[in-house]
Image 1 (cartoon, rainbow, N blue to C red):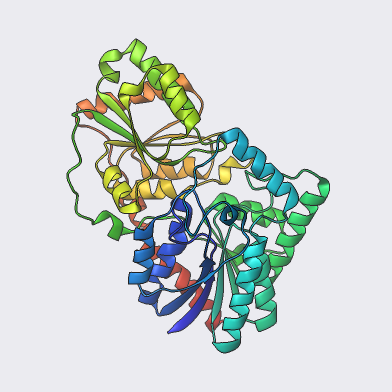
Image 2 (cartoon, rainbow, N blue to C red; image 1 turned 90 degrees about the horizontal axis):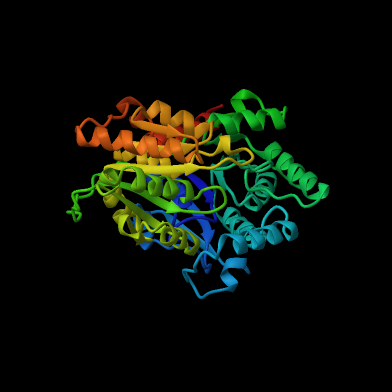
Length: 426
């Protein structure tokens, strides 16, 4: 087999959707004659842990090397301690301070340790490709250093933009300059750039003209068919239409406008509101729960809290409609969350409250989607009424199966390994 060294801070048992892309790539690489070794985080606290996903990696025979570091999250807890997400104001304040102090990010300490672990490994073993996934961006800086020292081809996977990222904060011109300079140098060292959507590709090509069209390839997020073949255990039926969200809320991703639309619906059409149940899987934050109480719609909401991936998939499959939102923020058009592509795997109708951009385009191609502006309460309420009417008539739309099949993670992993192979033959 060929060997690929994968550098990924976010990897099981860390939970949430950010780890799944890399997990699934490494899970299926051996099917295509590539053996992965993953260097990832060790003793760090995080907002969610999912040991079922770690078992998935272990069952696939993925070799995992863990490196500890004085990480900001690790300081606050014991090994694999799950910590609560602070209130949004506090989280954003801490995030801004962190971004002002650490360039390119607060994972620099870990990235340096990962670099040392990778260097020791590369001195003993032969690897054909280095594959680094970002964020964190500091891991790309050190992966570029490994490429220069060992001459091993470097592939970088952009799950989000780096320079100009929608959550970026540059308190001074120097911060802006430094980020762009670090990204420029790192990209210069990379043989191939992998991105999740066309919008990120376009922005990279505009920002860094030395990149050619062929230098950047698109491999979108996807879903793992194996996750959806699990036995459908019975989910308690309330004889109501279940509208479900799976994920967390932060920055411009908020349930506020959906909740306010539902409140309006409960006043104007109580007959419809009484037959709909809002389900939340993940982290419904204190401020979200407070708003639900203030609106007086507690009886219509079910908060399941964080569930492992298997249980989350089961509940998504047992829902009638899934909901997601992406609010208006700088470069929000580049966001296409992995959660959305898991939604595609359920083949359920989706209510997407999103800005124009990658997610909007994907929902249109999916076909079984109702799309509104993220903050238009009237539009969201009208869409819920329309969805409910179709539900009552047993006439909810079905997705474009050809589009769904294109996002099978086994096929996406094959695309990635073919790119590895092509480069080695070139």
